[in-house]
Amino acid sequence: MVRRLFTRLLLSVCVFVVLGITPGAAQGQTALRISGQLDLAAAESDRLGVNRAFRGDSPFNPVRLRLFAQKWVTPRIGVFSEILYDSSSGIRVNGAYAVINEIGGETWLNGRFGLAPNPVGAFGLRSTYFNANPLIGLPLAWQYRTNLVGEGTSTFASLTGAAAGPGGGVPLLYDACWNIQWELLGEAGIFEYSFALTPGSLSNPAKSADVEGQSWMARVGLTPAAGLRVGVSASEGPFLSAPTPDENGDLPYTAETNSFDQSLLGVDVEFLRGPFAIHAEVHASRWETPLVDDALDLTSGFVEVRYDISPRWYAAGRVGTMRFGEIAPNGGGNALPWDADLNRTEFALGYRASRGVLIKADWQRTRTVGTGFTQNLFATQLSTVF
Image 1 (cartoon, helix red, strand yellow):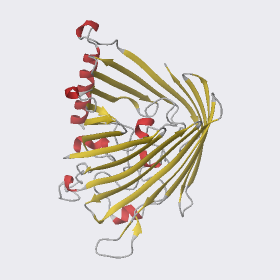
Image 2: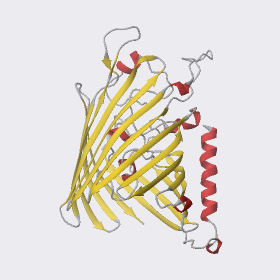
Image 3: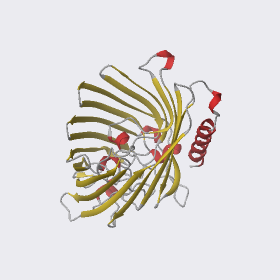
Image 4: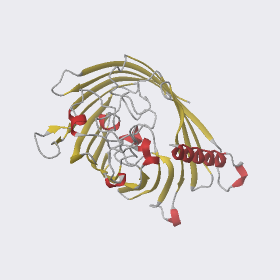
């Protein structure tokens, strides 16, 4: 924990030192640019926590403020930083990274280092920018917390015997905080690519300082026609953080934490035509964990459609699902799903009051298949950029 906080603090200090360079220090340098986004939401209580991240972050929280700072030190080197204030989790440095374009003079070879969004799928980048997410909520894969805990203490009983609803463990993907990562990315004609290395894994970045080893992440994309974009993503690496000893100082297992990986394969599609925008993603993930012999499989996907009714009004909807694989008790027995399957439906009506002001009225329904767990959430949100 201390190492992670120190690393983030050091990186943030370095970024802001560079941001403070005087305008004449580098040829082609642009002025420091400060911008922000304020989201004010009024929502029914998310009493079951189906939208809450590790720190209590949620897009439905009453106040969320993001401040962005960016500066191009030279025509090809830029530094960026993001500070987030959330009314439930307080203030933190959410992003701080440097970019280097055209490494070695090659237009297709660019680099990025720091607290940056992971390259898997397409929604993570869309959720970062104003007006790119037409709804308030996120797809299940990016936030819903499963029964699986990142310390490796999950057993057959704890996974299959949990009550319906979020388990408080790790999600399939996690976008509420970014990890330190090294990344190469670029475009060449109709092709685009990204390859990155990071500590921890996609599902457990908050514990990255406690994870031994590196995860690799990659996405290859193709734009075969105007308005059509297709991508394939993959990732693999250790996801377990160090276990906590019990009152006697004993550990729940003795195996090395980096012996247990999360692997992922995903596909994303974007289609833009006239007033329609369609996005769809499917991700399949598998975790290995020390106290369960079977691998834990999870498949999640969504389809999202937005229709611009007029220059000011739009309607949007997203339908998503999560399907959990079955595991058997160690030594044999009846196999059971390791968590409860979920369906989520969300609709929103949006009004662009001006270029920098967006108002949303949103309804979200999350339902656990085969149980009585259902939550309907009604919310409005005012978003403004400055």
